[in-house]
Length: 538
Image (cartoon, rainbow, N blue to C red):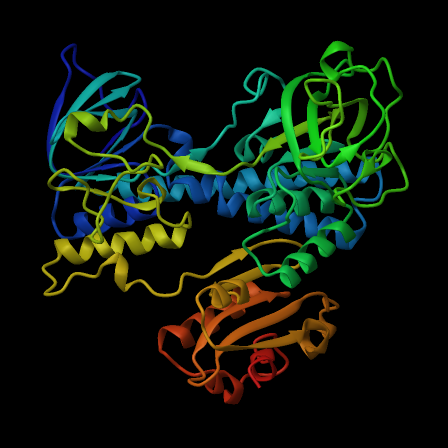
């Protein structure tokens, strides 16, 4: 049963009330899987989803699958040379967006009907908020619907974290990943605020389409949680695609540019240059001639070399920041101010649990200091018979973790003698879909050293893998950390073609406590990327 369109049911003048066994707030991976399982067990289920555009959850609508569709289209455009001229770039981008919309629409429809067509499941489209420990009101287009449920599951996901920058909410051309993946026209220049893995995926993708990409990073170290050699290899790959980086960069303000683009006022520590008019005091397009970001004296290696100042976002109106008394600062690095002009801005500064408007306090559900729903190892909240699954509970933000959260919850509802818990979860892998995908699982060398472990490092250049040569994809490196005395695999980092497939083999070995010699001696088919594990763990 569905309450999702005006034709679904007619809402009476008084608010309808539904009593059900289970209410799931949010149509994400964990929630929709749980709904189907509960329905198959004969339970009555209500699924509340705030938007009809989000049936199926973040992954299929605005996350994993649409972004990977665009990434594959961008790679194809690069291979075919379709990113070489303005005309072919636009055509390739238009076709990619069209295909992305087809895929997401198809998956959204399938996910909706997979639940809504079941007799035991009612899908209600509207914003839900708690009115009591087991009562929720859902604001639909036809009016409010009250739901009382024995058990409630919060599965509302996460939403982009937007930094407090003047103009960021009001300036046209500023997007989160959701909006940037649905543009009709390809931006010729793109500035990305944030250099986490989401931002880097978009940098790689748009560079492959032919967009000139500049990435702004708040601090001086690129991918500070990764090993230095791995981070350097990832950065080199992105720079080879044409991506430019500006480190120690803080965006102070965003405003419309005179040419219809976007103007950013950026402060860069460690960069010095003669003072001129401040960015905010001079309209875009006047004052100093635009200059490439390499035009300043850089004391922190903040940018990549470039030969054409007009290829990327351009900067002007440099202003060096003095101390309050006018004397040079010696205790702090110098700071230069720039006007950076671009066609579009992507805000990629992380995601935060989506709890706004839920009125969790009415149910006695508490939040953590980081704003996530507080849960225990069984994903139970601080209120009885209310659980939280997926990104909203503050765990790793992956679709497959949301699915595993479903397993944690279902093991409590199906009569298991010993429920599966979050503490039972082993070795969560991750993949970042750059031009050369980067995947890792377990500890890296930096973390193993910090933990005081006795380990050996295994390395293998991807160029030594025959299949990588056959695929004409020899870039990257493979690295593994192995405990010295036991041979236990502590972790692996694979910057390699098809790494997103191979990393799962390493995870399985780690889950089974198999020593590194197992992968060293395993018989793999040939030629494959997976067989490189023989040599990596040798």
